[in-house]
Image (cartoon, rainbow, N blue to C red):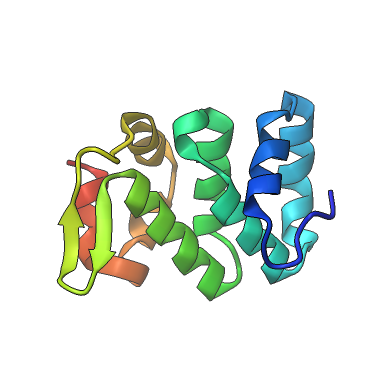
Length: 128
């Protein structure tokens, strides 16, 4: 699984769509040892609306040791919870809100205390 050169997210998404549970487990195990650019591709390749594996993996990245990647993952989680970050601040769009992502985020131990470190104003969108 050496598919990142800084782009080609569509290829990564296609690969993830074909993953078995064992391959998802392998991916989660190898992520900490991969370069930041590769991990960033994973953040933008997972689509929580496609199910639990995607949601769980994205939430894992909120705890990444790289602050920038953790911030990117936090913004992606907020997006799938319906929060849009724009020039006018944060707005809420129920059309993109994924109830599955919200429920998965709510059940993740230790997630809520991490969110204020990155974007205090987005917190309500996770638990509305």
